[in-house]
Length: 547
Ligand code: PEP
Ligand code: MG
Image 1 (cartoon, protein in one colour):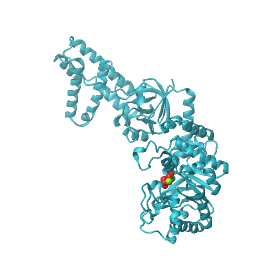
Image 2 (cartoon, rainbow, N blue to C red):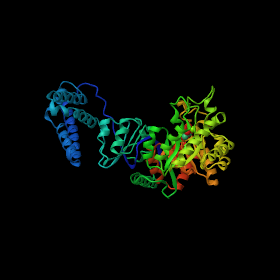
Image 3 (cartoon, rainbow, N blue to C red):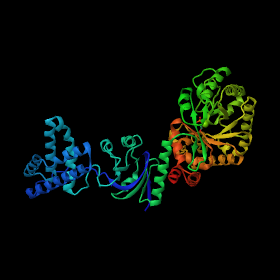
Image 4 (tube, helix red, strand yellow):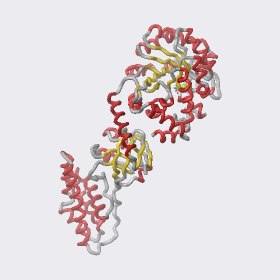
């Protein structure tokens, strides 16, 4: 069959095995009146109780330590003559068999609670025993965690925290639930226990006991009846990913050794220490406007130089890509004269500001140049919001005039992606700002949460523009990286590498997973992933195709 369904992957890892479903407890029985033969009904109930106790004994003998003790103690309860007496009384009082069971357990529970201490703590166990006895009596599926006697993939509509907390990773290979979300308890507990988990998977409702499935807790893919080769490949990729995560560190590389520079985004002075301490080859995007967000007046060249000096010192021996001021639209600065604009995102922002205030750009470049000359970082500089080759050429010239030999442009306007080859002839490198490139490609305001689907970085139209820019870079031998959020999604990072980008810049916390995902894929795998994403009709389909 090989049917694939998907949900949200919340605890990483890959597992394959037969499904065992968590059955819901039986509904509380209605009273349907007296049994025609109360003595026969009592015998049926006793047989059900004995069967429940025997099952608990069997579980206890397979368990060890405290779990075994708890199970043995629990198996004594259904055999307690006092319970049988209460059931017999309820039957002779005219209750139906299921109702007699429910009432007897309820009164037994009340007695234990009244006794206090250890017995009171056991009272809650009685609910589970009551549900099991009713299920046995009525021929319903056994409630609670299944125990098919072999490791299994637990499938449920949802899991109570108590169910999840009791999961044994030696028996439960993975968890798949129809309900739940990325911040649900199931997600948090599964992650802490280390069991791969997928939640919010509507297709899980169609999985039956014994069905073989392959679960990927990272991508959220759940494949029913997977073919053995796919299982083998998924398990091997997971093994490589784990080994890479553990071995961790060093420059990014694909499984076949292709070098992909892994860099960090630096957004504020407060982040400097964490960014510098991260295992990266440097900074791929230093958002300089964030240094001046709370400033009423423009900082002097000397002040700016001091700030850049600190950053370059923290990254001595590594690369730092400084982006010049990207004031305007979502990043207004008090000391920059933005004027009134009906559409600030389409207005005088980024490099366009240099037309109005060329001195401001030159001062910034002078400060960066002075700090770079003093420090040991490899300083590259790039301009935001470049739309034409003329803008790129002008910027590169200004940089070189201030002793900054490596000048590049951000590609975040569709025109720049379409004409990347002309742009790259005028400068040394390009960096794709997929946040803005997505916004302008889809004509969807990045500040408008309602348009999140259009702004999804998996949009094939956005990826097509990335491919164009990367291709131009490859032909001209110029590096083309990605510094937008797209780079921090491990699977999408592989797609970007498959499209030809040479570096990925992201939040420091994303480095480990991206590095590991890359290490698990060859260059050819990445190319195949990229082809699948490009061929998709929309972002959702692109994700599914790549999974
Ligand atoms: C981008 O647009 O993708 C980008 C990296 O720049 P920012 O998010 O700062 O606009
Ligand atoms: Mg941008």
